[in-house]
Image 1 (cartoon, helix red, strand yellow):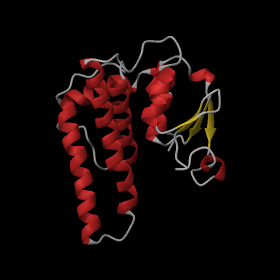
Image 2 (cartoon, one colour):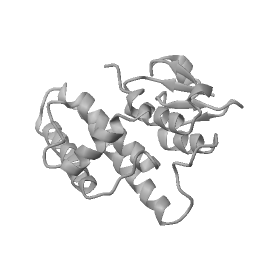
Image 3 (tube, helix red, strand yellow):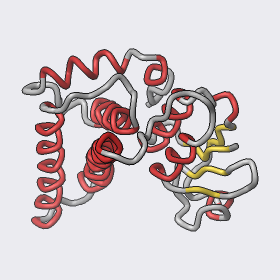
Length: 196
């Protein structure tokens, strides 16, 4: 198995954390590659990381699909619960974590461009999405990386710390802050901190 990898990608981090939690991290080759590399485009027409190559050569993308595949390998407890309320809650939390990433990643590019009215409005809209998501998460009961939802939220908060230290998310979110302090010290998160 092979994971097309960028150590600063929060989506890659989510997959890496899942592999560690599933106990299969040592079975995966981590393939550091630039998204402009033709070798990546040859296996993923979107030329994005993460891209995962299974042992039988199937290419999987992107992170939700890869994480679901990883959850099917190994004997550790599943991160995606069986169908029922726990599953829908975990997947909804995962979507919320991914939504934070979806709102923050493009914003990095936008702030580097000339700031016309449309761009300023777009940036404010993305910031508001993150603000609303954090308010919801403050009222959630999160587990200790027990589900894909926990993993996605932890990786999203880690990305906010990594890319937006000038916009601290902790003020006004003491419960979320305390939870993140605990999970960020866990081996799966500590091992996958972006190098910068």
